[in-house]
Image (cartoon, rainbow, N blue to C red; front, top):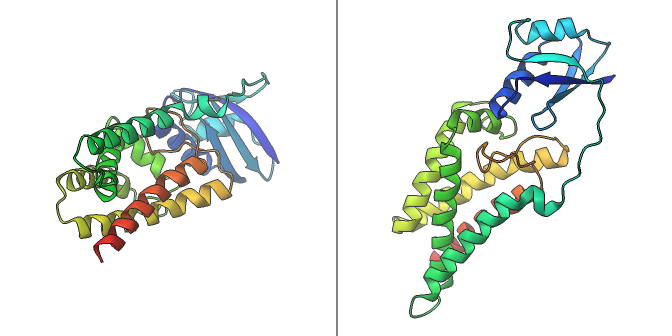
Length: 239
C-alpha cells in the first residue's frame, strides 16, 4: 500500500536525501519517494504506518522535519516544457552562442575548435552552479549516480573534476587525455541518468547543482550524450 504524507522543513536536495534515508529505515517500509517542490513523501509499505512512527524516524517532535497526513489534495499547476526547463535551455543557448561568436570572430570557422570552446564553457558554467552548494549537490547526485551511490565523496570530486576539465579545454592542454577522461566520465554519468529515467524516478537532476529544481528527464540524457559525442569526435579527429 502507498500513502502520501505532508512534510514541512525541507529546503533543498540535501533535506530530501536526509528525509528519504531516515524514512527508509522505518519497519515495513518498502519504498520512499520525497518531493521537495510538493513538500510531500510517498511511502510504500506492507501496512499502514502511523505518523508517530514516521516522526520518530525523522528525529521526534523537535526535528526540523514535521510529517503529517496529506489531507489537502490541491490541484497542482501543470507547468509547460519551456517553463520547467527554461534555466537549462537558457544556459545552453548562452554557451552555444558565446562559443559560436568566438569562432565567427576568427579568420575561418574551425568545427573542432568550436567544440573545444563549447566544452570548456559547459564545464566551467556547470561546475560554478554546483559549487554554490557542493554538499547539497553531492547528496542529490548520490541519489542516482552509480559511483556516488557507493562512494559519496565522488560527488565532491566530480565538481572539481568538471572545473579542471573546463580549464584544460580552454587552455587546450593535453587534448587527447582531456577528451578521453571526458568521454569516460560522462559515459559513466549517463548510466545512472538513464536508469533513473527508465525507472520513472521523480528526483531532482543535479546537473546545475541545487539552484534550480529541474526534474530528471531525457534532457539530462541529451546533455550528457552531447558531451560524450563531442569528446568522442575530437578523439577520432586526433587518431
